Length: 226
Image 1 (cartoon, rainbow, N blue to C red):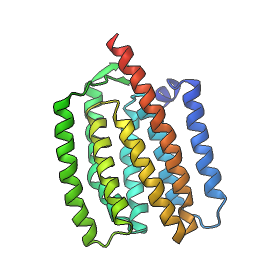
Image 2: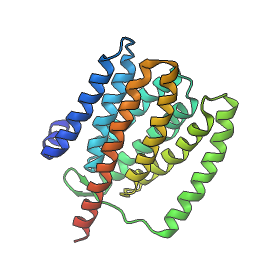
Image 3: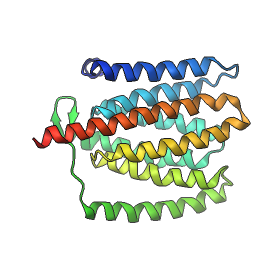
């Protein structure tokens, strides 16, 4: 499965993947403090994203694994919002996406893109507001660092994960928004420990991958509708 998925990557997708991995490795080994768990999470994350951008279900399998590793990294820095979000929301939804993607193939290695409608957006928006409000008070009880930024991350993560489950191309825009939030979050963390700077560069590469994901899913949607 993995070999076939890699084989289906176009040359420029392999280039995006290679550059992402290279940036993370260079940034990691450039610092004396070695958080190998952070490195592992970052490498799994960028690998997952390039396959999600392809509409390949392997990306969702890897997203589940990434969510577990990232939750552990977040726990170590007391980013309870990130930990709870990825363990309690991102991982389960990604697991659900594995099922929905397998059940809705367009062709081998590519999921069928779903068209969203105003009713769906309304439902997701209401749910996002409810989830955000609930998590805000949960995070506040845990005395979560950078509470406002962490809360915003809950909203963007929920929308992105839900749209991924629903096979919508707009998942990538919300993940891109979430990447921006997380870049800010880990920059703040890096002020306390430089060992977290690789996470900043990790999410910068995530942003690049997610922007490509939106472009490619739009292309997929156009092709599948033709």
